[in-house]
Image 1 (cartoon, rainbow, N blue to C red):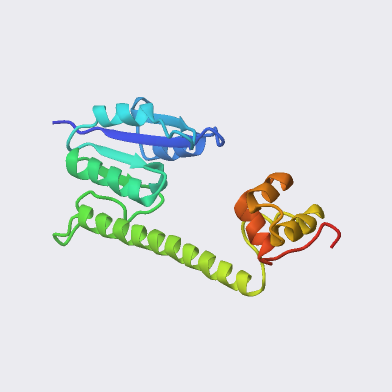
Image 2 (cartoon, rainbow, N blue to C red):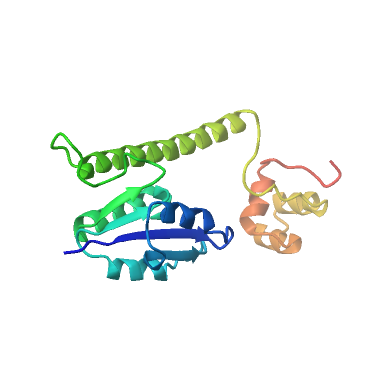
Length: 205
């Protein structure tokens, strides 16, 4: 049974230039008719040529890609597609930019699939760890900023001059907090917060 060599190319609609990937595949002797090209927007990631490729490839075929990120937007998606191709479809993968990601059988009774799966798991772990590190640095940055007095969220609503008069009337039981809030066109809880002395300041300050 003859086995075919296929190539897959993905570029974003921003890049619009698949020539570099196509050239690399042709140098690997992938025939033009077996190269599938998707120009994908990051928004919906709709890949009609990739879906067609998945229908066309058969067990024992080889899929060649320029770099591992052509398979997906993140390592979770890359791992999912990798398993789909190598396990469900029984197709070998060759990643030109990373020679260790080559699932074809190698020497010493070690299969290329085992080595490639291991490398991919390590890459996925590194990517996940980096994401967690970024989130941790963001959390630490927010804490440090708060300690320096940096305020997050919407800025405090300035207290209008009329508030002081209405606050005095409210304290003297002349009006309710609801009436005072209505006069100022603010929420009742905002009036009460101001009235209880939380961060009060006037427009003139």
